[in-house]
Length: 291
Image (cartoon, rainbow, N blue to C red):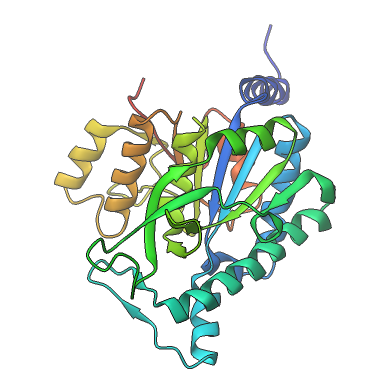
């Protein structure tokens, strides 16, 4: 008897929903995406509501690069970057960064409420007394005296898991607190999301970008890659530029216990759901081993 393709699609959806029941998904979105598309947060929020309503635990991490740039410019504070391209954040600039990140954080939380998420089900950084990530100075020689850019050192995984078990959606920005518990540090958004995903042993980390994933020589999306394929594609010059460190970081994450890292184009409607709930996926899934 021939199976109806619609029935097969529903069966696939139900199977994938079951696989993610009570599992944790970490989603990272960038400040650029928020700034570039006025409908972007609405698209993301609707998908997060669906995931939450279907018993998935969601941590949403966001950046705020262009919003910070605008605020620093308005305040007359020069923006400088190190050799690695990361922002050098003076203590004066850090005060602006923290304020802007809290503003964006509330904007993201409000977007979730606007699509029907209950306000009491959202725990967001701007309204939470605890900073979930402890940061070390990115420049250990400076020690945070002149540069408050940092990198994740410790994650309060027990506190995060407790909130997720209570049915909360966590909305976090990439600001960490120093070992002194007072000074705050500006952390790269991808680094922050990866540290969270590893600490809470997420089933998936989704990096929401403006590209469809890793592309082959014909510029077509590669559904999944592992270390061996990555090494080959880098050697052949297929994976180049900024995608190289992104994929290498993703491989490091899966080696540290995360089920997989998906790189997707978040500007496409329902991209997160298409990646999670179909066998083919929608972006590129970086995993420990293919097959």
